[in-house]
Length: 313
View (spheres, one colour):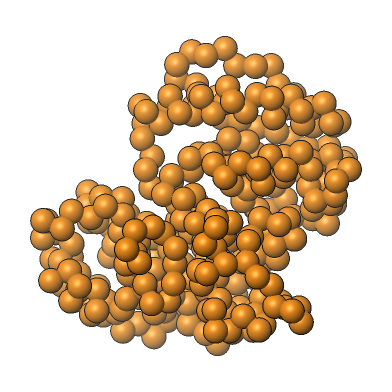
């Protein structure tokens, strides 16, 4: 089995402990809701507008590598001189002081090469994980832009469904694998709905890979929770979120800004191959429909294919 992805105990301590070397990064994320920290395999990404503002990777000698993608700098702004190795607190401070300039570079880059899907992914995570209504939602996003070459898996978002009626413990949680489509131009072809459903089905056909993914999601949730990056009312008697292969995952399609005057979506959903996935033995196919406006995820907002088609018509 491919190993679980997550942070080491020492990395967690460096982030969480008040005297930890990386603690100022965590504080900055907690204080700024335009930023998101994602947990990966021995490294973290700090996202801004769905783009990677900073990647911090653990070395074996107690130091950390810091990386910002200079390809974001399409406007010729003078990039501050920043330490690539974080050894002491002043290295962390230098990066945090540079955040405004780095964010400006990213803003200007996104105005040229817009990435709305990634920006909406981060927005969904913020709404459901750490907003004023996150305690009321029933899904917690553990990762965005998930990619694991060892697992052969790529998902726009990973989430854990934890129903409000089951918050006494975390034993009945389910995995949710999300695909987000912005507009109608990417509904067909190699990045279309059918291809994604085929990839999901192929991935879930191998129990060992799926079990490894569940383990990673459990670790991500636990570590995000310990870093106080999730806002919800905890059960009084303690809890541990567990995901079991006995529960089918949900595959959730999020269609942002679909044009209701177009017939393309209805035609695609009438494809017999897609209709077959509406009755899959491996996953429950759901389509997100907002509760008025917003991206808070509730079980009642996730419709089976047949109900979603009726809503479209």
